[in-house]
Length: 170
Image (cartoon, rainbow, N blue to C red; front, top):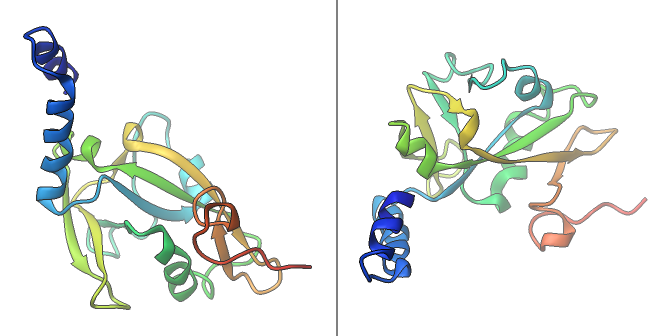
């Protein structure tokens, strides 16, 4: 992309034309630019450095990495699938993943109907893990200390961002 920008910039074309094309290119595929994956913090932190991340249930899920592209739906999903199986003491994290980077690495992303809500399309990363360079941000997830309920993704769906559930007052 950058060499393309450089070429066009030095051949009297405006770079924004290329960036406009780039954004359209992503929307034409129907694949969102940013997707999110939730996992226990230790799974992410204990992976070998500069490697490809595979979730613990990768093979059980049929060699896919489950992700979502709507931050507002993350907690509902976490509570549906992970609250009862994950002890309240387990810290979770949310990875923001750049799909452009995935696609540049030849990784296939497929939009699949959610198991919970057939109207919701979820991106599945197929037959591959997540290369470290595709992870652009790592957000902590706040859980309720008693129930283990997933409350919000700090910096993404908390009260400050106007998404998701507000903090529970003491």
